[in-house]
Length: 64
Image (cartoon, rainbow, N blue to C red; front, side, top):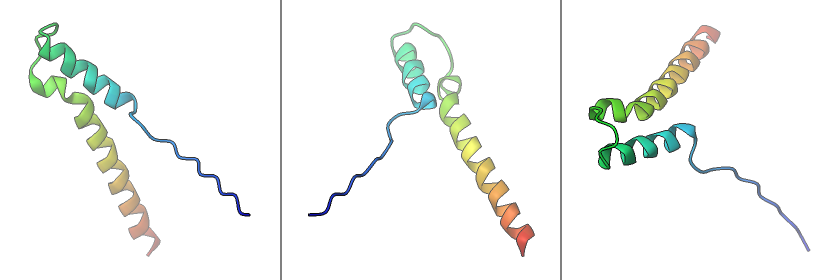
């Protein structure tokens, strides 16, 4: 009899929660921000991902 356990963590992060809050506040007219400001958490997450990707690419190229 074999037993396997799997731990996986997932779900929505801080930027996801913030994004949902901003969208709800915008759609309910609580805040009067432009959509680019409302979507700023998503842009931040994309920027961080791209920054890490570029840094890893540079690191790999330096090892050659």
